[in-house]
Amino acid sequence: HALAHTDNSELMMSSIINRLNPVIAVNARALNRCSSAATTSSSSAPVHNNNPGLKPSRRAFSIMTGGFFAAGGRSDIAVARQAAGANPEIAKVLVDPKFPDAFPFGEQEMQRYDESSDFLFYSQPRFVQHIDDDAIGALTKYYAEVFPESGREDTALLDVCSSWISHYPKDYKAGRISGLGMNEEELGRNPILSDYVVRDLNEDPTLPYEDNTFDVVTNAVSVDYLTKPLEMMKEVNRVLKPGGLAVMSFSNRCFPTKAVSIWTATGDLDHIWIVGAYYHFAGGFEPPAAEDISPKPGKTDPMYVVYARKKA
Image (cartoon, rainbow, N blue to C red; front, side, top):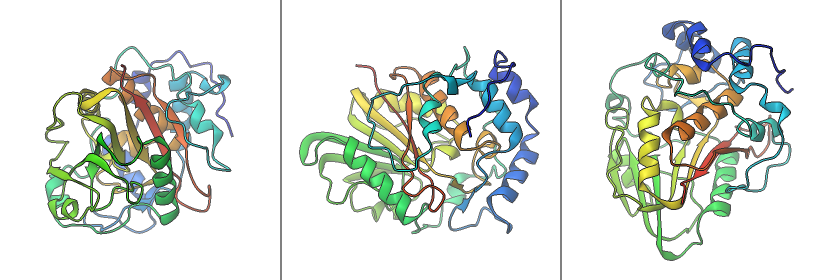
C-alpha cells in the first residue's frame, strides 16, 4: 500500500534522525529482524531482512519524501523493462524526493554494530552467492539492457565492492573491466575482470583511477556497508566519463553487523531514498531514478536498482 502523506512533511530529515533509537539498539533490533537465529560477523553468507520496514521508519520515510506518492512519471535513464508484479512505488520514490538542503546523514547514521576492521571480516574468501539465482538473473538481464554494446575496445567498466562474481552478462566483452574489492583471492577468481585492486573503501574511499575513465560503474548488494558513501559517490562521479552510468543495486539481504545503522533501521522504500540521496549530494549526476527489477516478487529475493548518469 502507498504510504499516506502526513501533515508533518515539512520536517527536515535531521529531525527524523534525532528521533531514531540509539545506534546499538537499532542494530540489535536489526539482527532479530534479519534472522531468527543469532548472526555474528563470522557468518559466511548474508541473511534475509524479510521485514520491509518498521512502522516508525515508514512514517519517517513519508515525512522525508513529503508525499512523493502523489507525483507521477519516471525517468527514462537506463530503464530496463520492469518485471511483472514489480512494486510500482519503487520508481515513484525518486520522482519528487524532496531532499533537504544538506546531506542528512552523519557519523551516527553510518555507525555499525561491528566496528572492527573490515579487512578482518573479509579476510577469508566467501565463494557464495549473496542473492538467489533468480535475483542474479534479473540483475544480469538489467545489465545486458543498459551496458554499452559488447565487444567495443573503447568501453571501460568498473565494478566497485567486487568479488568472485560480478553478475555481468555471460561473455560480455569490453576493452577494460576493472574490479575493486576487499579480498584478493575472490577478485582473482572473477573471470570477467581484466584488472583489480584490493581496497577498503571505508578506510580510503578514493578510487585509484584517472578522471573520466569508465563508461559504467556498478555496485551490487554492497552499498549498505559503506560508511563514507558521499565521498565514494563523488569518486564514482569523478572516474565516470561524461554521460557515464552509475548503477547501485541491492536486495533485502545483508550482513547485519556490518551494515550501517540507517540501513538496518529502515526498509526497502527508505533504502531507495537513501541511495538516491547519495547521488544527489555527491553532485555532478543527473537526477537519480529507481527501478524494481525483482523477478518473482514475494517468491524470490527482491532486487532494486538506483541509477544516474554523470552530467555531460
